[in-house]
Length: 421
Image 1 (cartoon, rainbow, N blue to C red):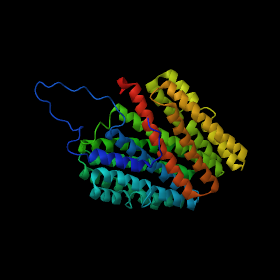
Image 2 (spheres, rainbow, N blue to C red):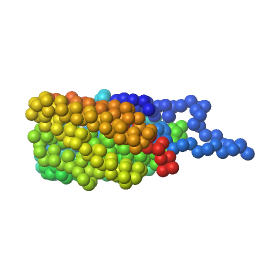
Image 3 (cartoon, helix red, strand yellow):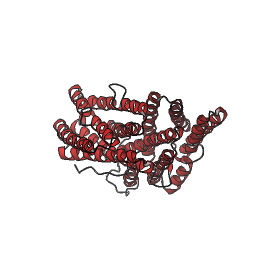
Image 4 (cartoon, rainbow, N blue to C red):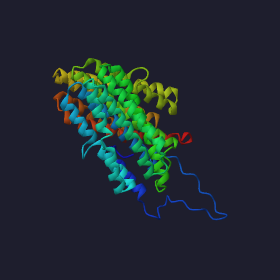
């Protein structure tokens, strides 16, 4: 296994899809009809690294990030944090180095420049992201007519999006896509409403629902794309692809929720910290609980229980809390100790995961966790400095790294339990 490297998720997806969709006509993955009497080749071993699995995981990461960045922007706007709103809005929908530009690049790499350009215009059109901005502004001003108009515009956009996507790919039924986008609108609207009400528990409960919905939308889009372009190897709906997409969503959410908790703490917003921390690491209905359930479903109850204890141990999430408290107090010795504890945890995690699955080299896993620590520490440092632009930039980098971690963990798991995939 190669050492995990940090890269932007959108760029990774674009490169992977370009290779999958634009392969030469004599690509060895191209199927042929067997001649009479020919022996049937053995079935290929299951893999989470096929073009289809990579496509689904990449779209899962980008579409779920779209929701979270939008929520960070609306949350900032509603609490009067103009710099935060502008930074997250740019990270979400800026012309370059943004979630939208990465998503457009991924679509372009498969469907071509003309479709990519059209998708760019559709995704950035007034009915979509500006529609959510208009809704946020309306609820901030308690302007119900304006809020109702914004919702109507968003729902009209859903219909346009469904019709347009169907015209590009007939494997995407217009009505089904429209309903998917309507669900996106409804779930994200619930987040904004909770932000306006100041109910942080409802904010993070509804945000997790809105975030998770995009994994379903990514699966639909990936499956239809593979159906249209059979040169993309593998199935987007295989158990291995589902595992990789699921881990991608959960591990990226781990970083997003952790950063929301540290941002709340450093900003003096205790209710936000408490709600984000509960959504991140609560005993049930939390990101950690979902990760543990995913591990348990494959590795069994004993390993799941051990993983739960390891993931929740003092060196991990409490270590980031300790680091955040230390930088808030400008206590360098305490901050240094917290970092040392986190790095020690990385070694323990690597050794433990290798003992459970020999396809996970201890040193490589340790390095991956160290990168997780380093990139999330950069987010906390930017939050402490009050640099909204740097916070948004470092957050995207920290989240993107977890796509690599998910890919490696999925690959090792499929290799260990091929009969389950």
